Length: 393
Image (cartoon, rainbow, N blue to C red; front, side, top):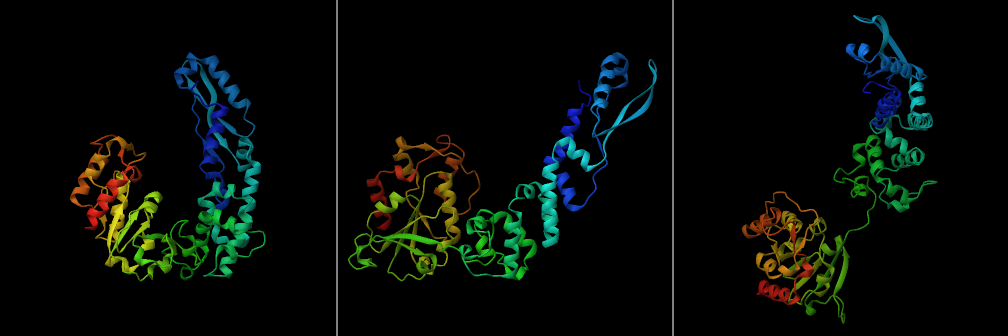
């Protein structure tokens, strides 16, 4: 039967709930009831052809009409004469809607969130209107979230670590796990001059609201024993903060960047050189090391689409950076070790050399094999040494 049944009425209301329309109206004080719902009813021909079924449908529709209202209209049928049949279905109130959905408790919980917000930070009501279901999900934590908003208003540009925020009943892990929603709330209440617009997303949370952030660190190895930073140290493997790394003053002529830790640890010794354990898609931590711009840079990544995308990104900061072991000869020489890239990148890259672009196109268009990749750790070490020294020479 294609005619509207009581279950269909509930389904229409459930859709309104799942879209957040009902709670958004509650938060914003908007009246959306009485509300007329969709009623699929028998066509005139069906009235006579399926008369018994129509009567059963009317009985079923009206028999369950405890929380909705059925409006009848008189029709004149050429065979049946004048009859009144259901023409409209209405939900007259929010109470009736919640009763049908069984959502009274959730609505009361959300109403409490709205009332608390209206009392403390009425400017956040707009967030609840926009994200009502999220607000409902956060109902238990909402008082703590508002306490954090209040704290930051009282302590703009705090300049401390999140761990140092001292609010009764709130710990730093709570703040960290709610950075996404807190960022949205902060932006609605904090003056523009109290935040750093360069901080974006959850990773930029501390910068945006002027908390101290965990310092970014650069790990590197010196490949020339004569460049020892610590007297008598055999393994020149160091991790420095971004700021300290930027202030290094070493007679380094070549810098290699590799994405694999074992390759980083086993990288051959090369005079006047260092190797950096790569940063994936993030090279911002190297940008302030001005001395790097005087070095010859070599990037060694996987021979796959993402490897070339990372190389392209590196060249946005260091245009003269070279690729290492990311060439066609290396790929073809290691055919037995080919694998498949899970989710290849298909985008256009603008900073590749002609040879790199040809190989990248072969990879992204599956010209050599489907989703082909050669991971850097699968390249023979003798080949690595040979290519490193060839580039050094």
